[in-house]
Length: 69
Image (cartoon, rainbow, N blue to C red; front, side, top):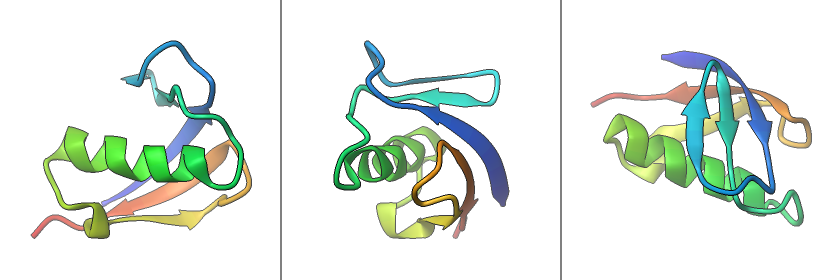
């Protein structure tokens, strides 16, 4: 499954609303990307290795692929 999402770093808490993922991690040195992968893995009940950022590594708009096994 592929998702197009917008990431908002430095939020008060980690949550997903209306196609946006709010993360309390800063957008520094890939910390927000790592937090995004962990958040989505937990949200969709998959392992972290099954969540991949396909497009938008350095952008707030991202395409993420989630492999459900």
